Image (cartoon, rainbow, N blue to C red; front, side):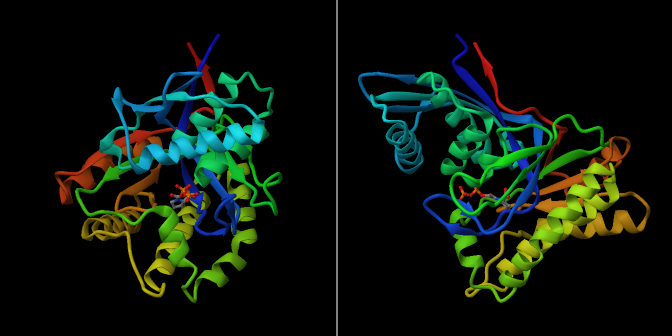
Length: 320
Ligand code: 2P0
């Protein structure tokens, strides 16, 4: 029986950045993402063990990170009226060089391994709902390709669906890791603060239109429109953060240097766009034939950054 679940990370092209219900992780906006092939988490849930353990990349984890994982599994146990101690064994194949958060793949893989361990019969839609309870972005990692998370109005209608599972679009992502050791504000905390910004409400009001435009760009295989919309969504999110009360930013000096470079490359005819999450790292959206030139230009201004290239990844799979 295949007990290990594999989920890939995703990058939001239209951002999720605000909750209307923190406990249920119900978002204030719908979002659209691209699942990535290069980064994934493999997780097995072993049940009816003597004690409770979280083992990540071969090492036992304790403290806050372990407590979040335990609380999540216990929450699912309550929901399904099952019990028992358990071991969560995870391997994260998210290279530290990528500067990508792994909570999307981590909670999607954990939700899937829970369902498998207890032999529950649940649809992929149901799995997407369960993943959402662990981390909002995990709701999208259940599927591959281009994915949309409909915000919904309650826990049973807030889940993701596929827009295109195996997209034909010529689209690559270059994850550029900026070298900073600053402690970052978690997504959960950042999105709480963002709601104090005067630009937050106008942004929410634009969500339906932005989602519709992005879906159209995907359906039309329109890389230019997709890039423009993704960059705008990221810029809006980060402008909101700057104008929060108190204001904050995830940007480092290098983040701005790369943004300026991307604008300059575009002005010179090399088409590429940026998107940025809750950290200083920049993800560049580009087409296959321009990847190597773009990497070279980034290295010219920042020789020490690491760059990892990714394409479209699949949804949940079960291994072993
Ligand atoms: C996203 N990001 O849509 C957004 C856009 C970054 C920017 O990190 O609090 O880890 O667990 O629901 O899913 C989403 O943060 O936050 C996130 P929680 P999550 O991917």
